[in-house]
Length: 359
Image (tube, rainbow, N blue to C red):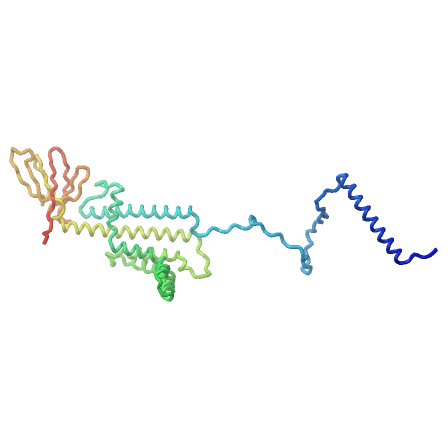
């Protein structure tokens, strides 16, 4: 029998491969019909767990086709809120500042009122002022120099931006920023200067308010960004809170000193211009007893209901049917303040005071 050639052997190999492929496809169809296979599902080999002590060798590179799973937008870390962007913090800041200013105005009004009427031997609690009147009287401190200083203090942090908007040369703005940083970093000097002035308190009158003002300014400057060099960690929260509390107390002290000085100054000025205040004429059915020097008295006769007439008085204050009056030529150290109560036996007449001549 003849030996098969190479071509015959190759043909037999191809035929066997085709028969095997047909058998595999037929077997697959049979398994699919029985439900052993699922169309469209990728069957992967089970993952072999890695031993706890076994790590990837540093020399073995990662497979080129394997990449880390990309993070979804939900898996990103939330960005921290920007400073000043929280409306709750803004509302808290505004409410806190408004509360502090309101309390400061009330305190300033009380100090001013007590100093003013204390000059005339009266006590503000005995007179009985309400809260609204004290706040209104605190506006007497809003003199023009005080307003200018307040406006400048509010504009100092925004001065570089203002100069830039006004097209000031950049070199001047840079110099201003450097000067501001130098002043802020010298905040300890402000505190030290205020402490020295406190030691010589009795010799710096009537400018003693400058001592607590310097201390408060130094404490506030020390809490600014310009006062902290770059790379320095921020101070703890308790130190910042303590500095702000101390600065607030020193500012209240400043307001008390300024309000008291202003009240006494206005009272001294009004006492010198007493003749221009509202004139008071008191008509009485009976003779009234006034401590000397006393007003001028005139007897109108027996047939008059209000027989006695008193003049030469000037009105200081009217409160709850009580008239606080001063005699002309009143002196703080020697003369009293008269309190006259309006009742059925007394009639009070108010007339204009002496006005300066108009040229």
